Every structure is written in structure tokens, then in C-alpha cells.
Length: 280
Ligand code: AMP
Image (cartoon, rainbow, N blue to C red; front, top):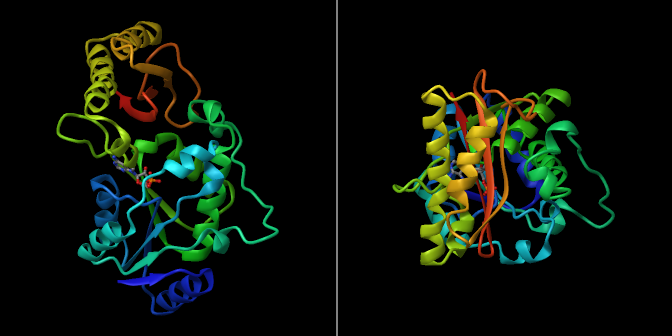
């Protein structure tokens, strides 16, 4: 596995692969890799002749600098995991390579960045769209893979790729969960044992909502009431939002009449967790 740290070297490497008529599959991450990330890398191997994984904790998408500082990192372990999967390139640029002095541009995807996480993390999706657009120009992939765990992020990236004519296939893959249902996340490492147990209310709420819909319930208000009740059984949990919305426009719905996104964000102690599912 080659480790590349500069933009210029990354661009040259990809250009050379393209001249050899090889397809480049790309998985952008912020590191502290778990099975969720690795599922994307495995699928990338099926989708491209060569695979590039980036690790970059993007300061522009953190609206609180304390959250950025506390973001878990373990480069040695990440390197080992990616080597085991035969990743071709690990792209690990230092911040000054991505945001050099005088940097002042941004990508804004307007409507779909506003609800859900966008309403509580001002500037977050502006930071995400900007860094992903920049990484696309550095890695020059034919296809890029993202996890549905960050459902709104997938919607924002797909919209950006269509709107700005990036010639890149965007693939989204299902959320990988622990055996007990908790969605894997780098942030789970910051949960205490008790908080980890409390966090299971999120996946329980998703399952309960799916059961209501399977049983014929179509009222968003009734489903959200049940979701709120499950989430607030433990006083440790602070619900940021629980929303039922259209999976492409992210507009809230009152009646379930087709596939509908149930998206949840909660704080368990000091840790913010998000999860979602599409109700059928
Ligand atoms: P992150 O390092 O959190 O920025 O995540 C990098 C990529 O991995 C994003 O596309 C995430 O959506 C995806 N990802 C994170 N957690 C999971 C998970 N539990 N299952 C599947 N994909 C995930």
C-alpha cells in the first residue's frame, strides 16, 4: 500500500492509473476505521481496478472545535486494517495541504443541507461538500462510496455531483451495526459502558417505527410519538431531532405513502449519535 500525503502526488498517481485505463474507486473517511468503513473498502475493490482510501479529519465540517479536538484518531491501526484489505493508496494529506494560506472557496448545496443535522450543525454540510469536491479533484475517481449511516451526507453529495457535473458514480451502502443493533461509529469509542447500553434506544426506536409501518400505521405523528417515547425512557438521552421525511428531498412528511426516511440524532452524555432507516 502506497501512502500519499501531497495533492500533486495524488493527482499524478490517479492520472497514471487512468492512462493505463484502470478504474479508480474512492472511499473518503475521517479515520479511526471500523467495520462500517471497511465494508465500503471491500465494495470499492469490487467496483474499481484500484482503490484509494483517504483519511482526513476535516476541520471545516466541525462546528465546534472541541468536537474536532476530541475526534478519535489511530493512524497505525488504520494503516494495518487498510493494508490487510489490499488497499492501493492511503491518501493522508496534512491540513495545510487541503487548506493552504489564503484559502477562501466553498461548495454550498442549498436545500438538502438545511434540515436534520444541517439545522443543528451550522456550516457542517458546507464543510462536507467542499472537502468532498476537493478530494474528488485530487483523487479523480470513477466511483466513490459512502455509507447510509450518514444518510443526509449521501443526499448532499449525490445532489452536488449532479448539480456540478462531476463524472463520478456515487454508491451508497447500508449501515453496518454491532450485534446488538448499535450503528458502528468512530464516536462510539467515547461512550462509557453504561452510555453504550443506553444508546441502544436509538436502534430500538428505528425497529419499533418499522414495525408500526409494517402493521399499517401511516401517521407520522403517531410514529414519531412512539419513537420519542422510546428515546426518552432514559434521562441520559437528549433528543436533538427525530424526523420522518422524503428520502430524496428530505422534506418532512405527515403521511407515510412510500419509502420514508426516519432520521434520529441524540446526545448520550457528551456524545452525539445519529442513525436512520428507510421505512417501507
Ligand atoms: P467518517 O469517517 O465518519 O467520515 O465515515 C466515512 C464513511 O464511512 C462515510 O461514508 C460514512 O457514512 C461511512 N460509515 C460510517 N459509519 C458507517 C457504518 N456504521 N456503516 C456503513 N458506513 C459507515
